[in-house]
Amino acid sequence: MKTIVATDQAPQAIGPYSQAVKANGFLFLSGQIPLDPVTGQLVYGGVAMQTRQSLVNIKAVLAKEGLTLENVVKTTVFLHDMNDFAAMNTVYAEFFPAEPPARSTVQVARLPKDAAVEIEVVAVY
Image (tube, rainbow, N blue to C red; front, side, top):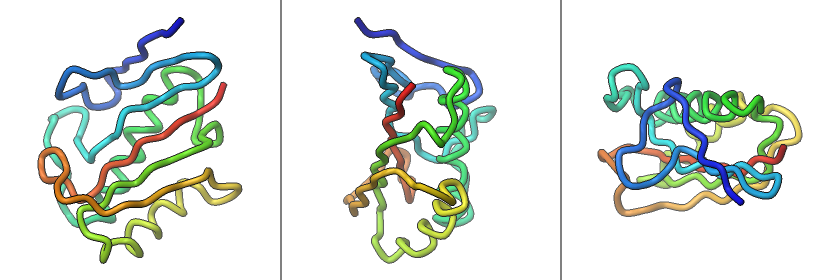
């Protein structure tokens, strides 16, 4: 059994996918790019600002299920440019200050809407 999870506090899906899917004690969040949930527009200002918005969006989807970033067990960070790793990492550390989840970070050729970063997470209930 699976349950689709959605909130208007985070950007709506821009394709045929769900914001998140709940299954077997896990919450699988689709990758979040730095879209402003009100305007639907990409947040500009560099990878630090975009990382912050992506994580704020993730927090909103988690909150819909009564979860927090402390429930996150795995993240995957997709960067358009690995030279942005340090700036992304500084902001990321603010959101996961203690006992951070497992993480993979990869550079990709292109992200939706030409974002600099996309972050997906898996959380446990």
